[in-house]
Amino acid sequence: MAASDRTVLQFSSSSSSSQSLSARVHPLVIFNICDCFVRRPDQAERVIGTLLGSILPDGTVDIRNSYAVPHNESIDQVALDIEYQHNMLVAHQKVNPKEVIVGWYSTGLGVTGHSVLIHEFFSREVTNPIHLTVDTEFANGVGTIKAYVSNNLSLGDRQIAAQFQEIPLDLRMVEAERIGFDTLKATTVEKIPSDLEGMEASMEHLLALIDDIYKYVDDVVEGRIAPDNNIGKFISDAVGSLPKSPPAVFDKLVNDSLQDHLLSLYLSSITRTQLSLAEKLNTAAQIL
Image 1 (spheres, rainbow, N blue to C red):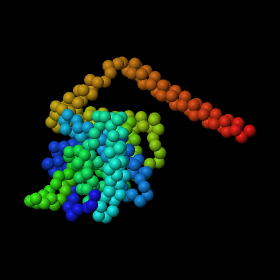
Image 2 (image 1 turned 120 degrees about the horizontal axis):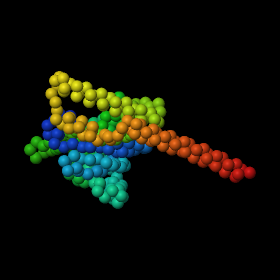
Image 3 (image 1 turned 90 degrees about the vertical axis):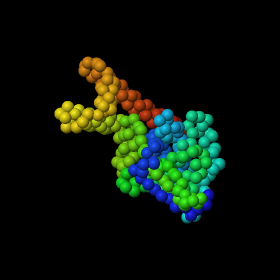
Image 4 (image 1 turned 90 degrees about the horizontal axis):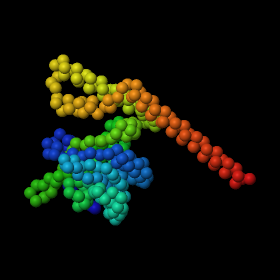
């Protein structure tokens, strides 16, 4: 694909026309993109790839999977391995037939001139594809993740620019995934948190949320802020989902679960020790 004279215009999500479409990305996609960036060829400055998922009933683009696509970039052109792209899609849909192409991704902060050419290719694969950018260089101190859609701007019969507009992006994850994602967001990581450290971080986050809810309820009762029926419904649903059990029974459940967890850690430690001994004995027997 050769570069054209068209320019790229990038707008923030404050633009009104971009509010009609939103995207939701799962952490597996972000982890996969980061892994592909780490394993990229030495001469490659960035990696690009295909996004897979589905369209939810409310129109949200649900991005659940991805794979990298080999490409070469120069100043005036960009080349994609189209055969590899199609072969990967066929292989993936044999395992997940309900997942289709919903867009493409690239590493880096924002869109570039070559983004127009790549977006045109994916526009032939799917209508109105999503362009996801992941800043793996931590240009702003954090790994910025943004999603865009593109519209063509024309003057008469002549197309003069490609307009990329940022759309709302929701990063959905369970608490265990959030701990791993927060660890990856930091520019430097001393060590990966253990299970107990992850549980402690989860409890601290939960207590902070409870404090926020407690303060909100007090403000509503005291008349400092106006009540919101939607927030009240969420609080009611959360309280209603709690198990109605006596404190003694709840403490026993927690203690039993903790003991089971510690037993699993102990058994796994014994297994590793046995494997290490078996390997050393096998090595010694081969030498003798």
